[in-house]
Length: 187
Image (cartoon, rainbow, N blue to C red; front, side, top):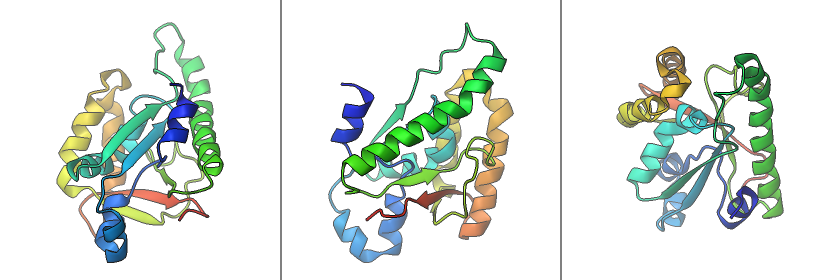
């Protein structure tokens, strides 16, 4: 099965806030009584973990099926860092476009969310968030998921993401949170 087929078969959520929706809206909790299938897309291995690893941890703890789908395998041993940096944002745009087009092809039957990575350097033009997910209880799980990608030099990148989670937590009234933007036209 290729990536397009996977996105067409399973509802795509680029950063899910199902757990928060159930907490804030009892009618949505009723709809979420069955287990959901959630796909979190990212340009490279590590992107979903940094951007929404806390939400993934919460959703899987609730018994939902969560799949992380990367545009590529992140291999770059034979590629110069200048080339890798030049390709970085185009990979992010490509997976975002693929996700959005899949959502449109599936007649917008599911909610599509965009997650934030770093402080905006990887998610340029990230507008004011429409939803937050409190990740305080799973912050250590998110950190472990990020550190599992040792090639991404987590000692360098993770502190920034943790600072962003703390800032988003202040906005959300929590110790740590992740921020999302709901795609207009989502149910």
